[in-house]
Image 1 (cartoon, one colour):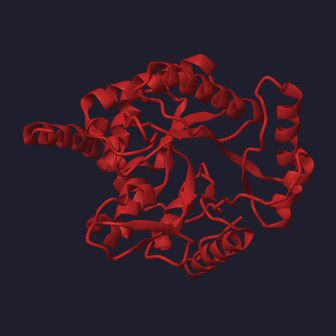
Image 2: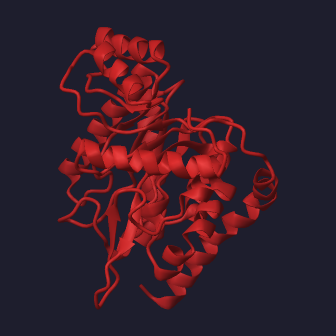
Image 3: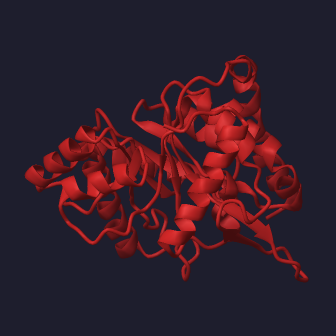
Length: 314
């Protein structure tokens, strides 16, 4: 990509920061007063919504990933919604992990159909959101790097795809959201805000996964400031969040790896305090760990930090 194109793209996205400046400064002064809704995957082998909801309560979770269901099965969707409501557990999100920008046209259409179905499920069960990533032009790895993932064409195609999903479902409760990624739009809060402003729909929300946006030594070492910037710029739009941690493996090139919260260098203090300021109470969901023991370790670490920062975990 020519240097002039890179510079113009950066100018295009960073202009969004100015639009959020006054709101961000005001938000930074709001005290922490809202309990954080914490959740994680569970390992109970059951298909019964009531049993699954009770297991979340037993583990001390107030947020959950959506159990498997077909949006056309209205009875099961209602049973899921009712069971979790009865336990006081929020259904945080429905995952729709497919490439909306797959280079192959047939694959791209199938992926969009799947994502629309998952968005319909989120709406049917009353989840906070359906979430995926914008995708990638990489023909081999659906979330992989590609030079055109930072192009104006990528941005415009993402806007069109998001609108297609929203128009197909016309959600009234759940929002459609995408995550930041380190090697595609949006890779940071300024780009994400530009998407929000361009899509201009109440049905589009923001899903925060700060570690996904840590793609440089600067962001790694200054991750607390990066977290605060994400919430300063995007806070009022946030509907759900992911919790993870990062370690830097010393090699001849940059290599960050995801680890159990507490084992890496990610500073959870600003994440928890910023979440505690938001009246919409976006759930904070652990992900990508291998065992129940690892999730327990991560949850205990997050609770410990929250206690030190006087942030209540619901």
